[in-house]
Image 1 (cartoon, rainbow, N blue to C red):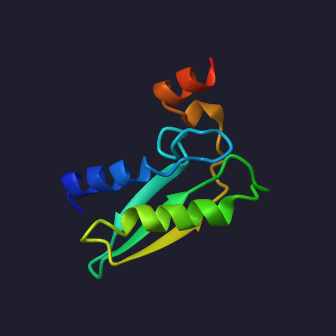
Image 2 (tube, one colour):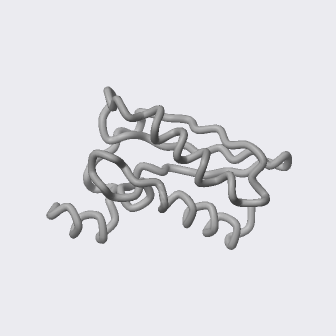
Length: 102
């Protein structure tokens, strides 16, 4: 996947807002990796802020919907992982400022 397409995918993922925190999943540092195979399947490796997050299915559906508008993406698979665990250190400067995290 070229850099422009990867940037386009990450841009689409920035439209997915964590319902509890009100910040997008990219700036929260929840996206660990995105890969696109030759058949057009995007594999999004991500985590959630907590293991028992009741909104996980909603976020997965939003990720799939966000990538559906990208012509190169024919299908999306979301792999939620717990290692490495998410910490506030993974958040962007923007997210930290928005949430008042130091």
